[in-house]
Amino acid sequence: MKPKIMNKILPFLLLASSLLWSQDPSAQLLDKVSATIAKQENISLDFTYKLFNAEANISQETSGKVFIQGEKYRFEYMGVIQINDQVNTYTIVPDNEEVSIVSNENAPEEMNPAKILTFYKEGYRFSWDISQNVQGRKIQYIKLNPIDSEADMAHILLGIDTQKNEVYKVIETGKNGTKTTITVQEYKSNTKLDAGLFTFNEATYTSLGYYIIKE
Image (cartoon, rainbow, N blue to C red; front, side, top):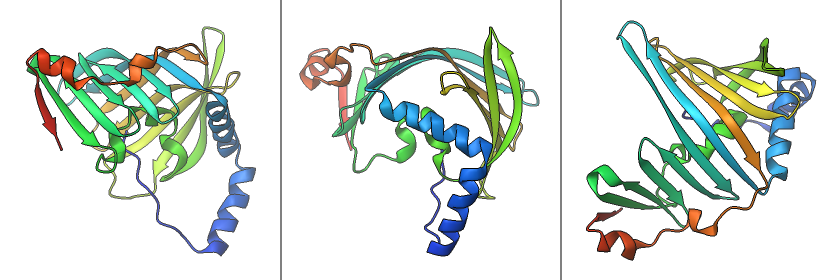
């Protein structure tokens, strides 16, 4: 789920594309999702992650959590914890007793797991796709085709709960046949989050014997 950032285009083309965007139902729905996210003080997600490649006989499934508050986030996945406090990104790997610290100025954009909610904003062409009823919820899928012809993925299906205007599922199909699916199992917003979720105490991990890597 690595978004590609479009280069700036001429003002005339930008105006033309914005007019087309406003008439496109898929773009209108994505605008509603963006507006919903912008109104929320914080977001908590429980999700499942599935990876499947029939040719390589690979099938994996796991789960994780994401907490987002403004520019801060906490990501828990496969035993690894990643915290961003708006200054640095801290990746804690208990199995290796290791912590890596990267300044946000140097951290690549794709490191941010919160992009699951906003990655679609740039770098894709949109088209209306199928809709499904999932336990009484209408999920409308929008197909995203990367503008970059050298992108690793063939396309992405973005499933949106049309009643709540929330991202429900992201299905990425790679050119090599690998399919990854992220499904939001629980979506909470505007709840009271412990401030400690977004803080990192280096002394705590040093006392535990963790190796600290600063980049």
